Image 1 (spheres, rainbow, N blue to C red):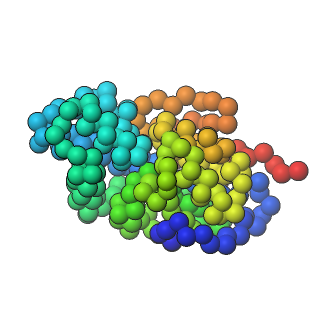
Image 2 (cartoon, rainbow, N blue to C red):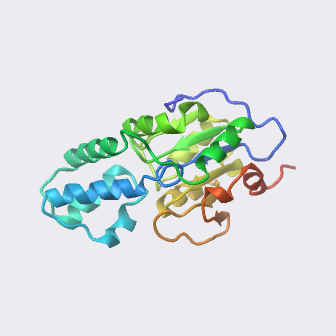
Length: 233
């Protein structure tokens, strides 16, 4: 499914307290966070500006409008937000036209979740046009729901995308495990009341109550995700 259209979804049939797994896309399932930065650097070089490496932590994982707006303000580049947004999406789509590299462990984890009929959603700050292209690699049939950043009034770091995903899947946020790679995404998931597994791709994410930090998706499997959710009484 490639939309936020609600559908009736059965919860896990094994009595597990885990009701759904919600996954970020860029930097979590696919190795594309570096692609976005490369595209941003290239565009601003053409505009006569050099991006500072320290800005990478500011723009990573956030909504397109926030990242693009920050870079315009930081550089003073003579380009409008709408024009830059279109340009960023077009350049990124061209970059992933051939193949999108998966993060280590992503293929195995998605296969395992599908095999055990765990309700799974893709929740990304990227726009729908980008998500649909990446789904050609990930496999759209592996997700009961996908939520794009341009389909919600407020995207990450606000909780809205994760609240929408949980509600649509018929799950309580506290019974959802979220896998994220950036501080922005972690903030969104935690604000929604979900249990978070952080797999940092850019910058450090410290452990915290309700949050587990792992090295890569190779450290994540279904028993591990189930262990994060307290048993139901």
